[in-house]
Image 1 (cartoon, protein in one colour):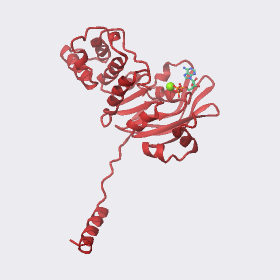
Image 2 (spheres, protein in one colour; image 1 turned 90 degrees about the vertical axis):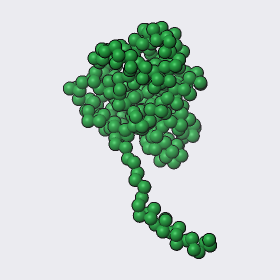
Image 3 (cartoon, helix red, strand yellow; image 1 turned 120 degrees about the vertical axis):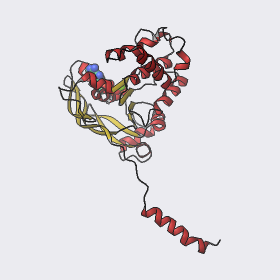
Image 4 (spheres, protein in one colour; image 1 turned 45 degrees about the vertical axis):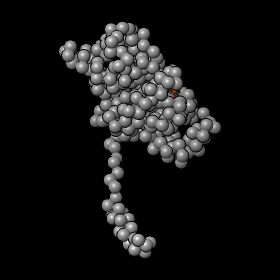
Length: 281
Ligand SMILES: Nc1ncnc2c1ncn2[C@@H]1O[C@H](COP(=O)(O)OP(=O)(O)OP(=O)(O)O)[C@@H](O)[C@H]1O
Ligand SMILES: [Mg+2]
């Protein structure tokens, strides 16, 4: 076959492809903040943050210490209500819920929006009871249902083979990485829509950190994940989108956000460029 005879065929294939563009899958927005500001007493920690977080993707929050990343996370499930002198203004919507509306049921909200912290914080109870306690608080009482959820969530975080024969031992006998996976299982047991993670790997050894990171990556497509990380390589590996925060005039601000490759490889803002290059922050 010569080049001349194959060209029209090639062109018609190209034209056909052009005429029928591949459908681009656009994820609906799960979390929407508008002009969100947060302060502790008179000191502003976050100013004017407007961010859209798409459903079932992983969004990483990056930026230097003190720029308000943890404060931002804590506003999303109203954990900020529990912080002394903390005031939040602006708008947060998660699905159809107006998060900052005083009438919003905070217990129901926190069931939908689970949170994992830097330091694993299992209850000083057995592995089984760590999972059963929140379930019972939310009305799950049947033994068979409790057993099924315990097995399902421990399997989901890869812990079941490691702990199935010691479910009644204290959760504190687990390693740090296992404890963090148990905390994730505890959050998953309540079937949340959103999972917030605040530096979930930074207190773990490199091997456990890798296991937990892979686990977080596996949540994509099923949960909306927002993760704070100081580990830029980790953000690049697991995130779909990245939001870069920076401290300016004493308050944290959202400088830039977008798809992970765009923020790391083609940042629009000089500050982002310097931060991801490692020359600032
Ligand atoms: N409970 C609190 N009471 C008073 N001020 C607080 C409280 N928590 C945070 N702050 C202040 O708010 C600002 C933002 O803190 P935040 O913890 O949100 O930053 P961060 O980006 O998570 O930092 P890091 O990367 O070190 O965890 C900081 O100036 C901090 O000192
Ligand atoms: Mg923090």
